[in-house]
Length: 99
Image 1 (cartoon, rainbow, N blue to C red):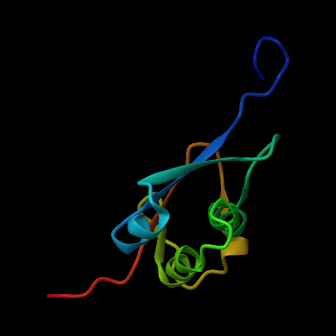
Image 2: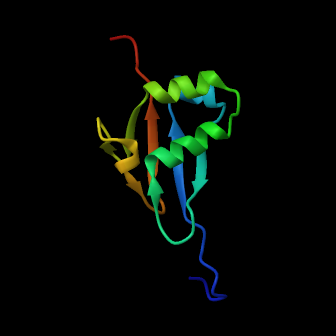
Image 3: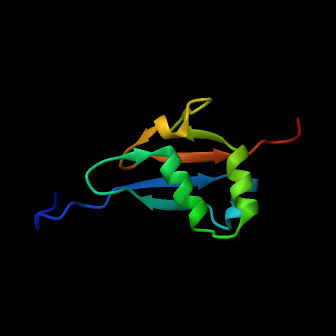
């Protein structure tokens, strides 16, 4: 808590790479977490998509991305089971072509 008794905002950074960055139109988003704790990866990604209403391309790219939290791949874990905290960084990596 801050000295005034108001809890400081907590944030998660979502970084976009390659096609995800092109679809987002930005390098990253910062998502504020609800007061009092953490939230899930699913909620953070839903928020990122909701910031681009009607942009099906962005939602489609997010759906096929590999996801890392920090340097740890999420893999097949359900996004609703991945809990995020203040300062976490989510990386969205779309499939890459080439050799």
